[in-house]
Length: 506
Image (cartoon, helix red, strand yellow):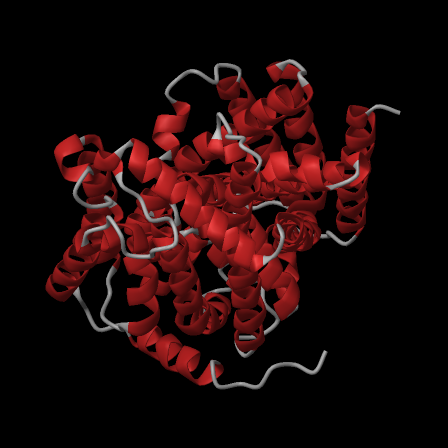
């Protein structure tokens, strides 16, 4: 058997396992709550691993090692910011959001929570939020499908179209039938696979390079050679602070602000068994993030040392993880490592498809007073998944278009439009629907304008001004429009009491 045959066999087994999980989840799904939120029965471990896998796409296995390989530890400020943001999200948002979404008329989506929490009987807030989710995530899903097509094209020499359709088809199959539970359980398997490979690849490479001391010596030698050849572009890859201004570091770390407003991540908090489960979820989720991030950084350094010591350089730094996997392991094991890259891509796609489906069915269709049987609503949810997937596939047919440019705004857009509103909803009684709508639109507009203005975007990541704009506008308008509402006061007090409840025993 050839190396590529072994690798394709490993990837084929991975695909089969994902479909099997989807079939299992399909048999556990009975109504819309099950399809969109797994009946709020996720254990802390499942929720934590699912949140991590759906968040950390292919950039963790390709982008981070590549950036460390090329320029060094200074590129890790984004990772540091994300870990801090994720911790704060689990620590302060998760327990309150789990409690409040159930108290506020059993809200199963972020937009429906905003509407129920703020008593917006006009449905404007809910529909606006659902539309923002639908537009951004359709492009986001498409970008993941593009990544899948490029992966197969670059790794196996297949056509882009075949690779893209294969990734899209497998992801769609287990998401379409398994719903949120299918996406979540596959996320767990994918998250564990990503973690295992991000530990195995750097450890084996460091051993092959002669140990940690030899790796550090090789990195320093590579830096010295680079600085001698190009003094104007001096680098010190092992320095966390070299070459970065305070503003640049803050801008990179500000990626962590995005966590508070990412619908495909915080929906995992809503699906926990109880608010108290957030504590265990936080420990598991942050441990996974730290280990995976350290593994990604170590991969970049180990790859630099290994290839430099052999007089080799990579044309594309972002392939360092893939190159090491194929050099260090048997082709079948290398295939499993390659499957981890697909896992990172597909776990994000599946989570975003479910959020898009919920935006169509729960936040737009049902916002207009459309009620029907639970079975029909589940079928509508599946139709929503299929619709978004088809549109995303059509967009992905042209990978050279403007899709990836728009995706660059998605993290900042969601973080700025929804993040401050989530925090204010959970910690400030006086937020109003008018304040939420004004803040949401302000955050989204500022992100769009700032990100499209090169002079501004080069100074600060657009999530920072967008986040501030949303928060300031939401507070100001709420103070001007607030009216006493006893139901809101009662639910807020009930939520505060609920977060003190102990976790269930099983």
